[in-house]
Image (cartoon, rainbow, N blue to C red; front, top):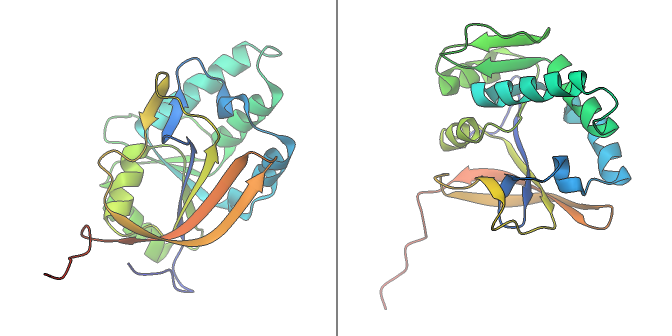
Length: 208
């Protein structure tokens, strides 16, 4: 996989997951209710907060719906969640969709071209680096195309075998992951950051 040069933009795929690989859970609050002050401070301070956010239509619709509900229920939604939703809708964003007629966020751009081709072009032509938000199928396509420079997960200490929704890794390509950073937040959340490389599958074994 080509690594970003000084003239190309970086692409970061970023997930929060349970130990068994789910992105969310039925009936669970945001961050599964386990976010702590250290993790929230890191979210606020991380250098990638200025990256352009990439997402698909379903993720855009979900955040738009959550933001509208939070605005309608002012004072009833957790302050950290409200702040996070507001930050998403105000951030420079590219939404990939061939079905959405338009996007309403003030700093969002709608792209109807093929996402892989568009991101490959954006990495070459834009100075601002990019990161994903949710959008499992978009991330899968970008990883399969070898366009991802960093793959990062924050693992929350839960197994949600009965209530888990959105399994992240199903149908993803095989990847070798070079560990470049680890960190623990609030004594319970584990950050793992890798440089991914596409592989064709298990290594061939020599005949006995």
